[in-house]
Every structure is written in C-alpha cells, then in structure tokens.
Picture (tube, each protein chain N blue to C red):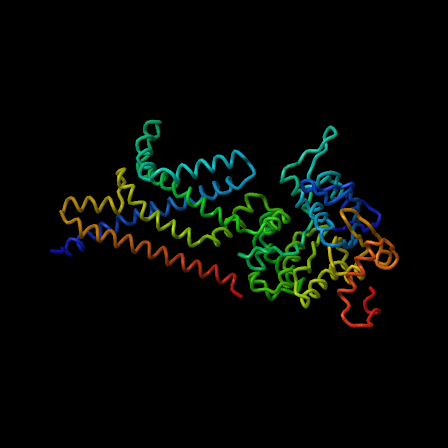
Length: 219
Length: 276
C-alpha cells in the first residue's frame, strides 16, 4: 500500500528542489533583514516622515495575507511594465513581507540598548550609519535572536506559497510528482520531512550562535 | 605635539553664559568657565546641582539652551547667524569635538566586543586607521591603563574598575586634547576606586587637560588646579583646592563639605584625618 519505491525514486529530485526552497527563503530573509533594519530605524527616528513610512509599511505587509501579496505582485508587476522572472518577484515579495515582521522584532531589541552605548559611540566620532551597523544591529540581534530564528523557520515554510505563482521549489515539485504518479501521500510526507530537516538545521544553527553570544556575557 | 605649553594661551574649553532647561526646569543658570591646556578642573556639588549636565553640554551630549561653548576656539553645536543660532549637522558636531574624550559613569563599553575591539573599532571607523595599526594602538592604550593582559576579555568578564580603565583607554586612543570624566568612580565598589583614580592621576601628571565631575574630594584636593562647586545650576565657588576646601565661606559649600566629611569619617576623634 505505502509505496516506498516512489519515495526513493523521487528523493533526488525533491532534494534538488529543496535547495531552491533554501535559496529562496534564506535570500528573502537576508534581504528582509536589511529592509527590516531600515524600517525599524526609520520607525524609531525623529523624522515624522520616516515614522509614517515605517508604520504604513509594517501595517500593510503584516495585515495582508502573504498569498494575496504574492498574487498581487505576480499580476501587477507586468501591468506596470516590470518583466522580472516570477522567482525574483516572489523572493522580493517574501523579503518585503518578512521585513515587516523583522522590523517589529528588532524594534524591541533596539529599545533595549542602553542609550549610553550610543553616546559612547558618538563621543568617539562614529557616524549614525556606523552606529547602526556596528552597535545597534549587533546588539539588537543578540537581544532578539530566538525570535529571528523563529521568523526564519516561518519563512522556510512560507516559501511553499510561491509555488502558486509558478516558481519551482520543493512544494511545487512535490505537487508535480504527486499528480503524475498518483502517489500524493508518499510524496507530500517526504516533502514535509525535508522541510522539517531544513528547519531543524536552522534551529540548531540558531542555538549554536546563541551559545557563542552567551560566552561573551558569561563571567 | 610640538606645541608650546603656554599657560595663558587660548582656553581649550570656553563656556560663556550657558543655560540648560529641561522643560520648565532650569538646570544650568548662566555658567561661565574656562579650562586651559594641561589644567585639571574638578567639578563638585550635590546631586542634582547640574554638574553632570554641564559636562554633558560641553560634550554636546545635551544641547545647551542658551549661551556659547567654544572648544579650542570653535563654537560647539551651533552656528551664529543674524542674531540667532542654528543647530549644525551631526558631522559638524563630530568635527568640533573630535579632540574631546569622554569617560562615563556607567563605562558604556560595547558588550559584544572584547576590550581590544572596544578601543580599536573607533580608530578604524572614525580615524580610518588600518586594522593592524588600530590593534597596535589599542593594545598600547590597554597597556597604559594596566590591562594589556585582558585585551581579549569581554566587558562582562572584567571588574568595574577594569571596565572603566578600558573606557579611559578607548577615549585616550583618539588622542584627545581634553578628557571629560563624568563621575568615573561613582558606579564602582569602593575597593576598585583606587585603580581608576591612579590612572587619572598618571594622566594629569603627563599634562592631560581634564575636567572631572567627582565626589572624590581627596582626588580633587590632590590633583586639581581648579575646583568648582556647582549648586543649583550656578558656580557658587571656584578656585584652587586650598581656596575652595579651606578658605571659602560660602555656607552651601561648607554644608556640602561638612556632609561629605561626616559620611567619610567613621572613627571618633579622627578629625585630623578628615581634613583634606
């Protein structure tokens, strides 16, 4: 009944597709982290415009379902004359979406930084941008690492949604194999296991980094 | 470096009629002071008197509300135009105060960097120094404050006194013309105060220009060229340690010193030891 042969046969293809899943999700988290940092800094700045932009950005990308965002970008970009590959549009949308969440995660971290650390940086002549990249971001990441790792695993899972806009990745390939072999259960179980392993690796990496950070503060 | 030490040259810090208000609270009410090259000025006074605020205004960590502060002849933080003043850019503030070093009560070391990185990073970023050169200078500065052997330690692995000495090394590495100390020993356990004061004494004897907000009257009496007593936002007394600690009859100052000595005398009949 349970066909293990089909699993063994399609595993190499599924693993190949999972590489794309990893590439798409980690790329979007990396870009989203930069967006999130900027939005977070803007949201905490003294500029009223900056705060307004950040507030609108966060409320839009948190308030609209990711699937709808993907469909909008899929149908809208060609309309405004932007003919980018669907994979690029999809990664861009994922990045914008996770950027909104990362901005909110980092905000808590930024607020936890003692103001004296920023004053010390000002007194040795660091620019605002240098303070952001050398003091604020590293410290905020240390404060919020578990939440950031969590967000990354969420994005690995959310990347399955981009199959809807025709981008080949793990879920999309699993669908293709499932419909051609009529063995959906085996294939989706395998795909699920692969997602699980990817996220297990990400979580362990997070724990490792957390341990390194702890070493800095251990007496 | 080759500059002559002329005691009557242009002051390094020139504060003229400075007021600072937080909302309706007036913290500084018309402060005038000058600090000349190689002078050590100790600023004493009760808590809430405005002495830390004054130091923070001189570093432009606080914007002063009124008056003028000149650092080596350049107006700090503002430009004067048609009778008014305009806040200058952060970069311009940085330029004017680039020769001002600041040491904080709470040390304010960056916890995610080792002692060495705390000192070397600013050299790389704001002085554009190459990596190895910055590391070499940083190591030399840590040696100077007696912490060469702790260069790789993170701040959390250092005692308060050691952290403050790293804080001093970080400021010194920038080769400041003046060092501002904001209650540098107030956050320290009593047995750690001495090592920090020793570093500051050494600096003073090397001719560093210093302004020190402190509760350490012994340090002020021994090291200061000028002691200023700030009370309710004004300089209520100023002069040599002898003038301020012995001769000045200002009742607020006498009361302040009386309180200080009572707190610090714990053995009956040791009045002689209590005098500065």
